[in-house]
Image 1 (cartoon, rainbow, N blue to C red):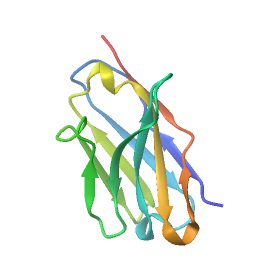
Image 2 (image 1 turned 120 degrees about the vertical axis):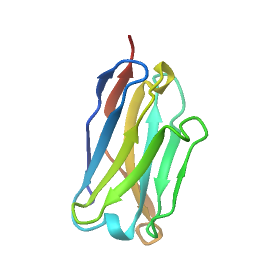
Image 3 (image 1 turned 90 degrees about the horizontal axis):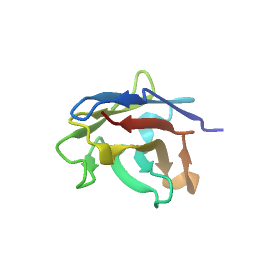
Image 4 (image 1 turned 180 degrees about the vertical axis):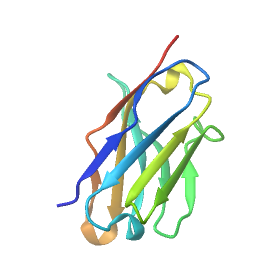
Length: 117
């Protein structure tokens, strides 16, 4: 079983920063693509960022330049550093991991990020 556990969400004022963590079971992060989606109630889940197994990264246009995805293979953890947060960034953030050999993606339980003054 692949388990992903997010942490680091919370309430932050506009312009502030948060770092989300996604701790994975086993030693899967180094060999998997991983990243983040977010979802606001009533809206479709939105892709945010990816870091591939070869460490290439990409970010959604809405967060590009503000968010940075990274990973620490030694700690089997994926991160999302979120800077210059905006109210529209408010969402539940979900990490995911994917390998073609799995035939599916695995998802964390989500962590709430609220950006509000």
